[in-house]
Length: 176
Image (cartoon, rainbow, N blue to C red; front, side, top):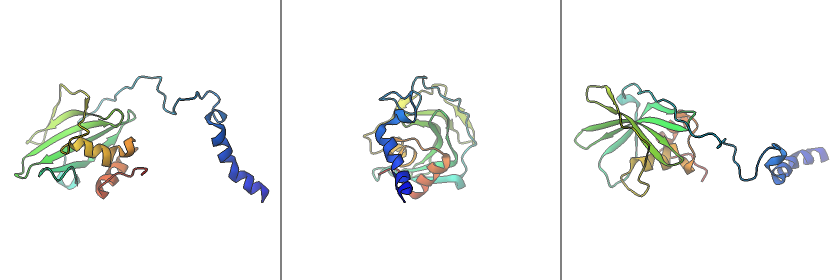
């Protein structure tokens, strides 16, 4: 019985002692992510054009009458921690805007890699660059994707499956 209690207490003792017990080279204030290397973006290829059966609607705001959808077949999470996806925005009259984008949860940025054309083909965005998104706008679909689906609690989802699950249930699987 004493051995059982001792085994139960070991994890708490290690945690109280600090991370240097498990990793002697650990420096106070450092994280488990290697920040010594500069961030490097992976090359993004334009995906297959979205199909209606793969579109999942997500809520942005009651202040807009547009419908916002994500093509679940296009969602990916790269080793560079960029969530890539195709967004389809449909106006009440049926006009569609289709973008293939990437989102970085830290530092809250997006990039449009390509634009969907009405003939079912993509046009590459030659001026693609990372842009901060509007955190305060009620009409920002980037804010909705960030908070509720791809970056719950500011943490990048780990897999496309996790993003799809968050979209289908209407919100993120955050910590709180």
